[in-house]
Figure (cartoon, rainbow, N blue to C red):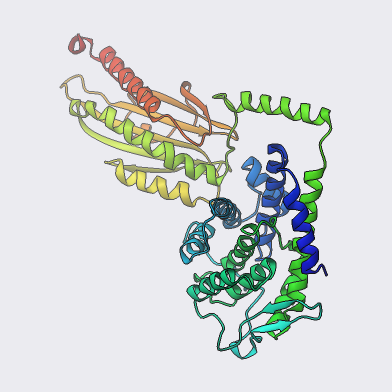
Length: 464
């Protein structure tokens, strides 16, 4: 086991080194965040592997067959890690507000179902809680809570930490370990116990990062060692837990030292520079692939684009309503698995949009197409009545989507047999984080103009 004196020596060496280059800093952070996101969730039973976590966070690719819940928990943890780093950089003190903020980021969506497996570590009852100060066999003084001093609430833990920080009687690493352990002994801040361990490990790193130590990850491969050390700590012996975490901090410090003192070869630096230029040019293009088609992209596309597109289309084409006796809407969904389409009809668009929002946010399979049909029945000219139908179809592939349309005069029954492939393309795009809704309005105006031209051809005497 490394001693506090060895930790102090490593810390002194780190403090005397020049800052890492931006590339070194970014590379080290990315690897540390990746391992942190993976391991802290894997300790709680998350099914994603390290490589699947890497693909999710760096390429936005989901793991086939893995629960959506597990993907979301990785993403939410990554957001919490980044918020913690910001808080340390901004020198935010540890407060109940900050802890609750991290807790909310970890939870993400409050409707996630709980895991079937129980949390692997359960704090011992109060009667087994250890004494306040323990002198370990290595000569280090470590502070634990007695049964009557055990924290009963989050404010108790925060106040204890701030008092110890002010007094300066504990080594910074011992204080961070104490913060981690005391928080673990609290009841979870939410019903789902899954998030309690990751939040405790976030607080461990808050204590370390705020005092100048590097990110320290409790690795998934050390699961048994870690939980066994926590269980022994419950019985009054903090030595295994302290030994385990001090060794982790020492290892992280040594990695940081090695990174700072190793310069990449000139050829590597040149290659990195050229690649950076290529990435900048590529990712700035409109046709660059930013996102791929997965359940999360599917939900975002509907929220940020499709719903607004359909509402605007209804608004711009409503000007034709007075020319016809009746009007109805159709919405059709097609899954990637080539199952039978789901077709819904209604006299108004609003209930169909509610249904679409539910489908896109709760689908267990990817959709390959969404179609909206607007049917105006019976043109108001006796002896020359006809229907006017507009069918707009959004077709999704792995890297982008197409918008196609068709205008016809089919009878209502025939029109409700939705055609999965249309021939006239209106728009073609990759998936994006943001979409230009002004351009969407222009495209819908173009569709409205083509509807008018179709009418003008059908009744030239009136149009003229």
